[in-house]
Image 1 (cartoon, rainbow, N blue to C red):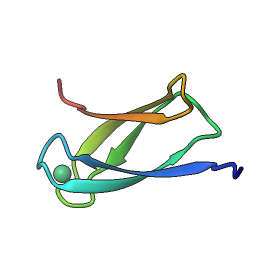
Image 2: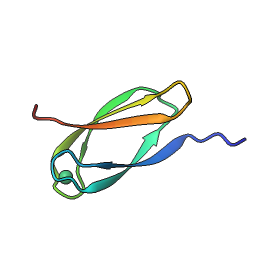
Image 3: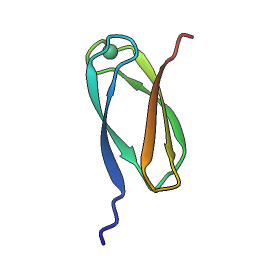
Image 4: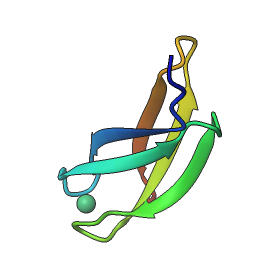
Length: 65
Ligand SMILES: [Zn+2]
């Protein structure tokens, strides 16, 4: 059984809709940070959490709402 510390997830940018690859640090269960979109450069509000099964949930939100 291997212990993963990071997860690679794909989510669409809430501004331009481009699919982005995000590396999520699973050693910190609940995170919230701003990451600029690699395509349109707008600031994305990234929220991550660890669910009961140990899977990482990721949600991208617009920072201007
Ligand atoms: Zn974008």
